[in-house]
Length: 412
Ligand code: HAM
Image (cartoon, rainbow, N blue to C red; front, side, top):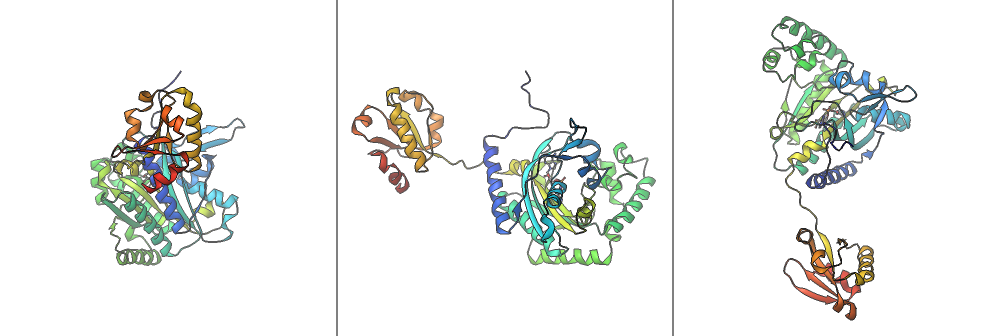
């Protein structure tokens, strides 16, 4: 029997679960505040949903997809990201009849990357998308939502918003050609991994972690010199609006993102507190993608954030205490115990008991630390038809009837 966990996966419990739930609550709040509707998609899709849109030469498609052949010979892939499944779902379910469509989702993604701090093979993403508008205020609204979620969850962490514009698909094509020419001339100095990408995916060389590659990239042509007037004007408006809203940002001309579908605005929220996996959230425009997937030719924009990376930076969570710990002297009071339990359930009072019918054993230290009150169920209580309620913070004790428990606890 195999009891190891699969490499790159992790179990979520303890503080992480508190953090995960807090993240989910803040996301749900922000989504409802801005009228984004939740859209959940299956964990797996037909493989060809991903290969072309994400880029046949992208790392995700080349090396990281969990793909398997189904019994009827279909190739299926565990979703490595949420944008393409969301578009697929919007098309399949005719959700694009009324535009713009604003959707969000939270759930697990799968990429067979080399595991390290902040990088898993199964990880959870928050995802926000807007389909069907070119308005630069959609870019701004999405950045605002991202900013609000991250600052609510990580009030004391330095987070830097990086932005860039990749221009249109045509601008990007021209830029890639120039980049390939530039890197071809530096071929001998480049790392082996980057050398392989000179023609297939020169943009990826720009975010190589190799020191020599980084130096060579500093002199490389920059995308901003290739973008057309319309894209530049759009980019200028976005920068101006961010300044008006007092959202600090850094223009980062080498920010190109790892997936092929992007054009025009791209952005990332980064932090120095995480080590090499320093991106908490990333996204951008993907005009043309919805059409490529068989939908109408409408623009789109969105972002995704890694829940594990956010959780790692959250301060130790404040646990909510259980209201009542039940302590029972003897198994002959079992009927009483269950009567009290039913009362507590009906009155939304949280409780705990450990199935030990012995006063000492039923009061373990660890559980008491997690509770606000103890209700003692023993001979005296039984004969008086009342219960002893002990307040754990100051040790005060009270004799009360079952039907007064709620009133008492709420008052205190
Ligand atoms: P991405 O940059 O590939 O973009 O991923 C977004 C975020 O997911 C990253 O910034 C990171 O926080 C988290 N993440 C990615 N890979 C891992 C991993 N292996 N382990 C832990 N966390 C990870 C996308 O996925 C795009 N679909 C975002 C998007 C939405 N663009 C437009 N709409």
